[in-house]
Amino acid sequence: MTPFPSAEWFRRLAERMASQPEKYRRLGGLDLTLVPRILFPDGHAAQYALVFAGQCCREVAVPATLEAVRGPHPVLIEGEYAAWKEMVESILRHGRADLTHTLNYLTLPDWPLRLAALDAEGGQLDVDRFYRYADSLQEFFNEAAAVDTEFATEDREQTPTISGGGAA
Amino acid sequence: MVTAISPMQEEVFDRLAMMRDGKFDLRWMTANPGGWGTHAQPSSSGLTLEDINVGRYGEIPEHGSAHGSMAPRGAEVPPETPSLGCYDVDERAVVWADNAAELYEEAVARQWSSTRDIPWDRLEPLPDEIERAVCQLCTQLTEVEFIAGDLPAKWLWRINHDFHEVKLFLASQIFDEARHMEVFRKRALANGGGLMQASPRSEELLRVIMEAPSYTVASALMHILAEGFVLTLFRHGEFLAPSEVEKKIFRLCMQDEARHVGYGTLHLKHFLKARPERVEEIHRILDEGEEAIFALGLEPQNIEPRLILAGGGVDRMQEGMMKMAFLHQKQVREYLHRLKVAGLDRTERLRIPLEFPT
Image 1: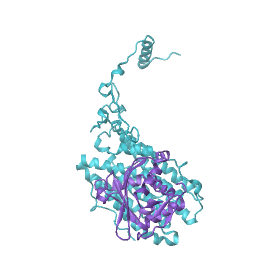
Image 2: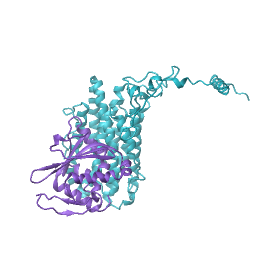
Image 3: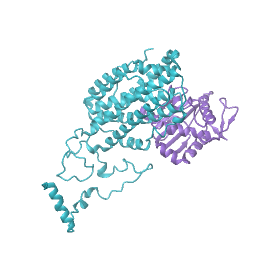
Image 4: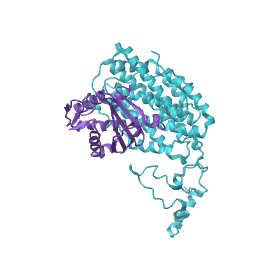
């Protein structure tokens, strides 16, 4: 079981990506640092920095703060734990995000997830990179379908689990 | 019948005779000595256009070469090379963007096929009014998308070959738009519906873009204003998609459109830095373009299908309006942010209301 959220969980996705070079080569390369940030009801947050270069997620880091994020073109994707959990559950259930749980669907209205540039100079152009790589990023998250995921609960006291096993 | 031999043919026959005698020219083998010995190194993605911009080959001139030919940048150009007389868009300031080479490479790597890559077999019958709304949206997009092919084509043949990165990017954009025209037409005709009503307001906006007096002005209108708005429209299309088919279509088109917007934004930035005195030209055309795009946005055949899709049916269009209000703000906000990156502040001059008139 791989806990969500955790660096290990994102590394599983990165490993799945690395194991399918032909699929991601055909989708096209990326040059982006995606920063998923999960907000918990108790007020704390977990953030990860996924450095995408070419057809790989080259690094999964756990920056202490958003200011500590390192990597080119950092773009924040932020939302409450419940929204993240629902998205991952959708992927686990359907083998990919269903119509109402794609990254674009969840971020377009700025709720339940929102996008923001972390680098003032890149600004909107960095967010536009998220749109440029939309299909690759969706496929990356769809890899969760093959990751046995153990969810932290919103109050972090229980640990219900849901198994993935279907191919992405 | 005896055909007269022209001087050029005579020269060719003379050359042929010399070659038969073992007399070869070979001067080309020592041409361009300063450009010889180049070892461009591939980067992680392979050997990119940026990777080969080394030494003299990477020197982008402020003014394109005066020879006016298609001779490649960095090659030796014999003095007798004739000018083609058409490359009059030949200042770096009026075409360049620092991301043109990167975006071209990205476009090549992210090509897709509307025949192969869309899961057409997952199309399902939709309620009549939803299918009509999807088909009207596709009619509109089939109509407007190729402006971003026609417009670059109008200017491409005039751009100096020393700016090949820009020419290649624009060529990729034309092909992207061909695919968009193709995929939306296919979707309209694939699920029991068909093409619906064309849009006079669209034509008014397209005319403003086509008649723009210079390349940069046209680019600001098309790449940043029009394609920026269409980019949000594609995101909205993905959001509203009734099936996996439309979802995939809009997601792939979104990727393409974002590249075009990226070029336009950095081109305008480069232009305004080099020609700050021409900022008013850009403002004036955006005044006109914003008014046209706002009028287009409220044309019934443009907005009503999206209200139906957003609300979930004809009887729920007013619910759709509330959702569209947010989208409008987002569209305008992102447009202003891109202009800000380019160095243009239109906050005080904007001709589109920030708030959607509900």
